[in-house]
Length: 437
Ligand code: GDP
Ligand code: GDP
Image 1 (tube, helix red, strand yellow):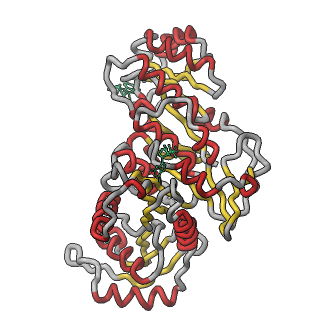
Image 2 (cartoon, helix red, strand yellow):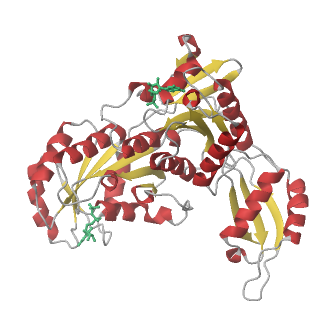
């Protein structure tokens, strides 16, 4: 299960520098999604066989010197609610400030593991200065330098050791895990209630966990799958949701633990930055996608032309990924509720699609012959053989060729579109890799 580490602290102590250091090794191999914002505040880290997410909660609030106490209160409350481990960063060159004291007061009361990070300890001498941070009452300060990397390896060792020991949930592997995500008030709880109806017996918590299960089994009308974090959605957090990034951070765990995400969009508001941020999280995690344009009952103009415009506006904002189902729903009147579940099942099925190698080569090699990769410095890229990896988590195609490094994004996109036009991968991202033969 994905663990989450949150970085908190006042402005300028080095939170984003630390975030970059922790995620750097990974960032290089993760494809950046074009046109997304907020990429700097969410990333993945791999350390000694543990993979976890790190969020720079400070990066989501306005980073100004005169940060309000109220603002930092929310930042810290959010970290306490959502994270498994909290990194509280202070600045050894600056010493203890009132705001540090204030944050420490809150963190001392929380039950999650907190690491006190004395950042900017660029050389060993600073460890003597760091002793003043004992006054914060959070134990030993960890002296690190986010800039030169000193101490960060030891810190990571200790962080991963603190992850909660969760027994594996007893899930039936063959069933899809579905997360309903979206901005506050888009209709997430309403649609889940519409799925479940009055009949409580059809949802059962999954046994075998040491903490609250995040999976609920749904078995009705021929559908059988897990809803992710249903309780979390219905409960609603303690932190007020008046700032947009809260809903995004809230979605992280649910998205990471799902196969297919239902992204709820409020038809009366259109697509806003928050929707794009959640979409970008779904993309980064390579999950399946079904978009629900909800509150369709409130939309007056439902002409075919209006629907077409709505649809192309959505695909334009989410480009280059455009091959996903869009469904116009009303959680209130239950209009097209089952269509959502059918689409989810279809997307899940598409993620498991496997194109036989012979068929793949037969169809794609002739496409490539008619439209080969552009020549580079007078040399030609020759694609010889294509295969789809069996049993991978996301459909993954390997193109064997002589000069893989010269095949650029636009051509890969062309190949992807060709694959999508020939076989059904609607709703799922696919990977296109070039390898030397
Ligand atoms: P944030 O506002 O907490 O995210 O802080 P930043 O990461 O933006 O860093 C604030 C300033 O401190 C920048 O000028 C960084 O270059 C600097 N800084 C961050 N980490 C270190 C460090 O380990 N040593 C030194 N000397 N400077 C650092
Ligand atoms: P959440 O914050 O995403 O879980 O949103 P809720 O499910 O709590 O819905 C927010 C508000 O929108 C509530 O007042 C709902 O009754 C209302 N709502 C949700 N879905 C629909 C819908 O399809 N049509 C209409 N008219 N109202 C809806």
